[in-house]
Length: 515
Ligand SMILES: Nc1ncnc2c1ncn2[C@@H]1O[C@H](COP(=O)(O)OP(=O)(O)OP(=O)(O)O)[C@@H](O)[C@H]1O
Figure 1 (cartoon, rainbow, N blue to C red):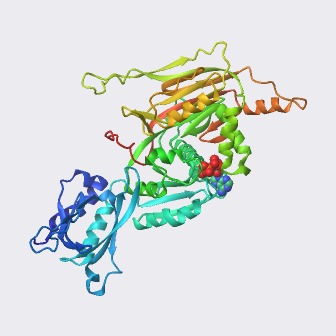
Figure 2 (cartoon, rainbow, N blue to C red):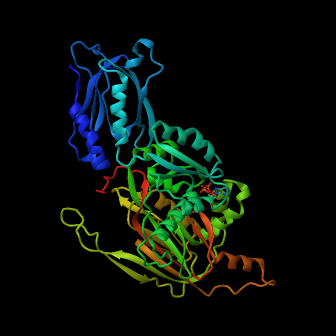
Figure 3 (cartoon, helix red, strand yellow):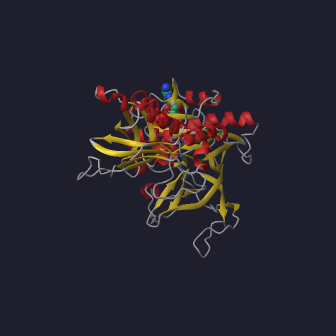
């Protein structure tokens, strides 16, 4: 087969690049950029580079040495190609024609790994292939060219620094992504950086840590963006401006829930490769207010009452290391729950998602409505929710961080075991929820208000230690797994759907809606 170089097309894409930017690749009809015969693992292939993909197909030419042996074809869209470079280890006689192709291999439904193909070209000098491949890699829509990495050195098993040095950095370098690395020196350091640093020269912020570090970065970015755009962050009804830089989350904490939701798995290599692939979606988050002031953002989980108390206890037992989580979880199952009085209002979506006869969503407008929870004569033990929507897969639910509503559970004296069973059922996507008495689950939630009533009197010197502790716990809320103190007697939350640009993939087995 004669080798073909489509010079005209190469020139066209180069010119179009400047004019049309990243969108060029999407809009163009597919063209062959370079095609020729190659060999790989002693088998003959035709390597074809087009505007949309790279393919290696078994050479069926009569002169080929493939007879009798099976060659596996490989077609890779440009999102999956990381780098092409000269193969320095190949024998001297073929070195000028040898190249290494580094690409992303979909190891399982959710896990990504890097693979290398050693290719020997029969028609061209390796440089010609490498130039075209690198040019196409640079055009992958959304692939960052420069990222700012924030590392928590004390998160999880305290291996954030090593993870960054041994896995995260080398993978970005392989894909020609430039990095600036900052290791946090103290608690809230990430928040300060995210709030004050100028990220305009970066295409992404990469968080190497757990949910706590992610929450800090998110909070800092939200504050910086509202300050820059003049939005009043203290107003729950204000239309917040989303940050214009996407966040990627590499799991290196004890709790890595957000990384799991974004990547479908908690795996360091997969999460970095997903950032390099450049796929982004708009995640949801809550803003929380207290005493008519912005308190914090919430990107994973909210808990007042039982879960707030439990997180406060885990904070006090930091010396126990990771074992404190299991210890406190067990403790909260056997312990009597603290009770409190409050008034609750829930903002929910009504209508809007009914299906028409074809099973498609009807374009009926949804309405948001505040409802007062009828808690007359009830004492409360907790309010909690995960900041995540769900998609119905028929036999189970799958968590959707790129959705538009959450659930809210109100505990008015449910058994502790029942509470935990519900949490695990929600987490594992079970459709048949255990029915737990004194536990009300609200669906399609977009906001809430909690007003604490009948709080404990200020405790003086003579107060018992248990009363003083109860008083202290009244002002603690669990935000993304961290205990946060608030001053007022109220908490208010608003959901921001399709808001936050994050690197990640749409939940497995679910078609991604048009962006
Ligand atoms: N260098 C540092 N020294 C002390 N604390 C830090 C440092 N860097 C980050 N932190 C704090 O670590 C907390 C949690 O971090 P992260 O979520 O990354 O790890 P984690 O192991 O899941 O956390 P934890 O189990 O402590 O909640 C954050 O509250 C953050 O303020």
